[in-house]
Length: 275
Image (tube, rainbow, N blue to C red):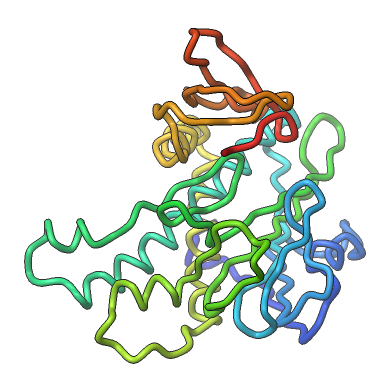
């Protein structure tokens, strides 16, 4: 199927408890792939590890995309997570690059230097520099050794400029625009247009995932964007502070590090905390 011929069934709701929870109520055998459930407001948005996803009503994109990657064995489900993270990071990077180009001179080096890095903080948060702009939550339904359906929840901070004090390191696309285009009077960014760009970027990587060697290419791009990879930093592992360097991600999505004493360790999501 060509990307251009793929149609998304986008359904907007004023208020939902959670777009992911709404998708779980849909009959898996009757709901079509590429159905997108969007909410202007969530009363109980869900983040990683059961955390709450905070989003000011009407300001951001909170949506869930239903995929049916039956071509993926259950043991390779983290490949889908990597594909989504890379796709969203690429889309965010393109958006802020456009902001920077409006405020740069004709020098390509000047334009490039204005753009903060867009990385993936393991396992799948999207960071602009050291600030979080997007969270991703993937829930897979397995059967017969394969993925039967995936509910891919995305929360992207678009127009929100103020966040609760307890939210760590937040940013938004509008805040990035203000930094990169200080001479431009800020106005709300178009949610529909950004949603369409995100979906097309996701679709491109999803199609790549279906191709021979596609997973390997996606993992390479994921590791290239992995936040702090190759940089010795502080972490809390098992309640103890350590100095370690991220070296990669293994097949099942566990983070691989080497400590400053040379010990190789592998951590699941709840076993490590970034400092």
